[in-house]
Length: 588
Image (cartoon, rainbow, N blue to C red):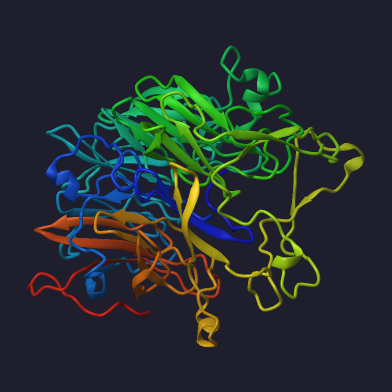
């Protein structure tokens, strides 16, 4: 349901390397494609990175090839921009017409000269606080250019040239996501925009981050007019009477149940006019006695008509979720081949380490999906789903079982940590004290994962066949590496991008602060640099004046033993210029 949290035993990372290859980390999971069908773009747009994920299809792919497998070892810092704030960053910036737009850890919006890192403007809403914020959106109609961005519970429309709020948009430049959800008073509702809006024609389509416990508002998917901020349509993820899926909840659940929200982001097929929306679990995450049923449209991948909000098709990955196993990343639109025929597909990864692949026009699975029987729940009042879907291919990219040959010298299995009360609108009989113990990592006494390595991997999967092409450890602990234990893999929070230069760029690793480039054909490490803080975000690449750059937001914040910050670092091949400064990789 809301943001990404502590990972389980293993993390992994997914990307699409060719029209049929996908790579994965069970942190923020992202993919990139090597030339899938994509919306028509101009030469300028091919040089830009105008959308989160590089394009509306969220394929994380760039046709730029100036930086390639032959010269990437010469990559050096071109410029860096320090926000001088703490709190961490999960933001992937966007780059449009030589201007980079980004977010600071405290939700300030800024624009930089993308060639030099020189500040152009900054917008401060006056709101104080930090939250995960994955990025921004850009809208233009030939006369007007706007940055659309979430700041806590508001969506702002800013003039892309000056950073000033557009007074004619909503209430003096902003709309309040707490309104129009059917829960009053709106001021008591908690919903924030943590992933960027999807822009389709003159619409901006948004989800939101909702609480994981009740009271929580419903996770309606909404579209607003990009010019005026007026609400144009809503899709109820907790269906109301007369709507499809209403019978999968208790009769009046739509009045009180919450979440089933889109916190992970979306992908758009501009040609078909379909937006693909993954949703989170319903509140409460781990107890569902007050929401007996399959709970559509929680834990779903939903295909919606982007113009009207009408459902085209859906797939539910977990029925009646009581494990918080929702979709943690936006889907990717790819192209695969079946029997010599090319099929436009949508790929969706899960917290369990699954990859689902569907025909994006009708939702037909492109690999068989089995039905796995599950035991009934023994929790009083709970009625667990008896069966759950299980993809037969590709094989899971994250560890599924703890077996004797995987636990090394492990003797005992113990989880401990903070305990929180689990409230419920339908308390179990006899006041039985059920308690939520939080998200805990399975660690050994030294603080490392208590299972055999690798503790995090980067995987390449051929989506034509569902077979793995390569799989490598991603990340290491500096103190273990100093003792000779290298390439253990670590927790990863961030996605990769793939370029026509034959490269996969990824930060993500939580402890070594490294930014890496791999050969996309075989996973060979070709280059790495030390960032000021961990790059727990997805990079972007773009070209200005014939020079290709790769930029990543380095903010850390996921390792309690390390400091956090907010530095954007851009790399390029060295060249002599009075407007740029090249040098060795940054260290902090």
